[in-house]
Length: 142
Image (cartoon, rainbow, N blue to C red; front, top):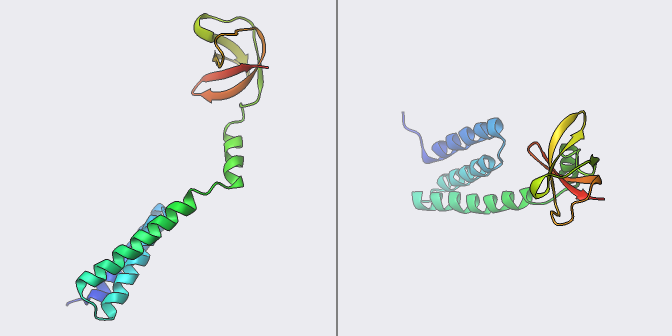
């Protein structure tokens, strides 16, 4: 049993479409559409070279389009950042500083390591959490 080039391109498109459903990358969807373009070229009796060119052109254009769409910032990105970084903007009280702008503070019922943003002006008192790196709070004076 022999398959025509059209059928081979369509089988490739179907496999890429199924993989896309499992992996959700959108790039595999672009490749599936490009394989359909290759199948169309095969159906129109173009040579194998032109079928590959059709596949490559659609893949390139689709990949650029997906990359461009994925790089657009949305409001939901900002909301996701805020929800994942609930500690940023909260306040802690620094009772004493150690060497090189380091200290230990009580926050959310536990001891946290903390580092000052400005190590030249180390004052005790209320500080705001600017960032969380692992289990270390980055603080700035309020």
